[in-house]
Structures are given as C-alpha cells and as structure tokens.
Image (cartoon, rainbow, N blue to C red; front, side, top):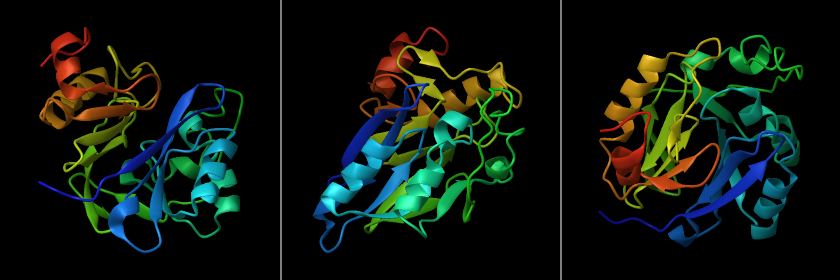
Length: 218
C-alpha cells in the first residue's frame, strides 16, 4: 500500500516530559496542512517549528485529556486561532472540567477550548488526502485513542503503550484489564514493523512490544 510520506516532528514538553507531535504529508502538493497530536505545557518549540515550516494546523487531536496532554492547547490556539480540537466522545466534558481531567488533583487546574469534533473507534480521518484510522484504546483513560497510518506503518498511541511498559491505571477513570485488552486487540494486531510513537519515552515497534513487554505479551 502506498501513500505520500509523512513527516513527524516530536517534542518533549512540560514538567511531565510529554511527547507531543506534529505530523504532515509535505509531499502531497500545495500548502501543507498538519495535525498537532497532544499539546502539553510550554509548547513554544512546537509552535515555532510549525511557523518555521509554514505549515497550517488543521486540527489539534488529543489522544486523551489528562493535563499533561492538554496543558498547552490554549497556547497553540492563541498561535493558530480557529484550529479545531478533536477528542474521543468519552472525554467530551473533560476539556472544560479540571476535576474530570485530574488537573485539580495535581494542583494545576487546566481547561481549554473544545471539543469541536468527537472521535469514534474505526473512524477515518483525512490529512492531505491520506487516510488515518482512529483506534479506541481505553484503559489509561476512558477516551484514549490511537491514530494509525497504514501506508507508513505508524501509530500514535498516547499513554496506552510505552517501550517496555504501559500506561498507568491507578487514576480515576482507569481500567487495567481494559487497557490490556485494548493493547492486544487494537495495537498488537497491527503489523510487527509498525512504529509506535508514545506519549512518554522513546519510540518502539509493535513487534518489539509483543515479544518483550513484561506487562502485556501477545
């Protein structure tokens, strides 16, 4: 399966070293739209990189609504007014409720605009003519999603799966068994060579995690 190549810019932002991404298909021709995938605190490097390349944010897509993934949304919107914010419907109210998104409990109440679009499992999103699939991967939070681009064998997984680890399940709204099932049924079914870009820590692959992850094996 072929498609235009993707360019992924990664930024480790904020006090929780959250991986936030900008993804684009620069070879698609014409002005280059991009997505911002999660926006943590202090997103100035991410904003600067978009401006430097002359890209146009088409959406801020949130893998989930914990504060370290939404803390910079307002700053990104101030830099690029009118950019819509997309999140899974299970966390529709979280962006405007610091109790639900757990930021009050962390001593840093956070809210942001949106959502402008609610995501659903197996929904197809389009960026520069390229299709991306939404994969609902709950457990770390009820509305956690992963974004999969089959032609480039790339999946953004938020805090569902890490190199040698998995997302925490000791927060309100978490479900450990649900997360294990989501990883096995929604991520481990992808081709082994699929590049996994997580919300924290280094990238990995589906095959590597299936073979070695001590928390959930295939």
